[in-house]
Amino acid sequence: MSLEELRAGWAAWSSADRIDFCTNARWLRNQSDFTDMLRFIAAEAKPMATSSIALSIATSLPRDEAFGILVGLLDSASPSSSANVLQAIARTGHPSAVEVIAGRLRTLQADPDILVDDPFMNWIAFAAICAVKYLLELGAPPSEFESTVRTLSQHPCAEVRDTCSRYVGTKYPWLPAPADLDLG
Image 1: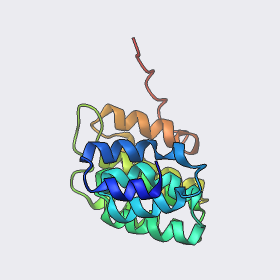
Image 2: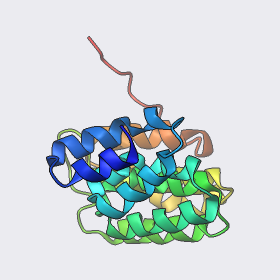
Image 3: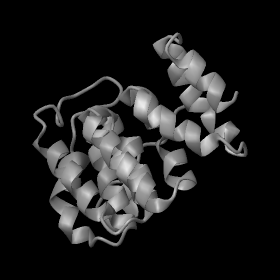
Image 4: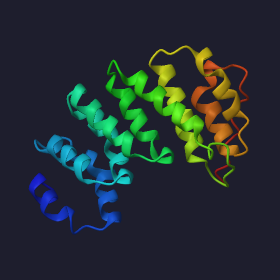
């Protein structure tokens, strides 16, 4: 697939085809037009598709450009679909990454659905856990998020509780160990 083929076909593709392409676009990273494909997708795609290319944007484009694109993607992402974009913003190492991620964490914490139970995963709570994880990785002190982590570690959704323990448990020794995965 070339950039020209992507541009020519994009409008006719179904949403599922676009998401599938974005999910697998990283395999084209050695092509000379890959960075331009990322720019095109970031400008044209819906948030569900762009979250699939967020990490490629962070690792393939110049830092300031990647950060600007990713902040734009975060602004258009729903609270429940922002985790991948938060990860990519953290990966840029941009000096403003902490401020942006902390801002999204505040938005997530204020969302009335953050504590709603779900049979599988509350994706707003998941994004909040990810935001805390990336802020800690960027050097924020664990004490800043202790209240948030305590709340998420007691979430009604078991998968949220386990994810909280898995993602930030090393920084909060009082967290219970995650439940063993039952794969069989």
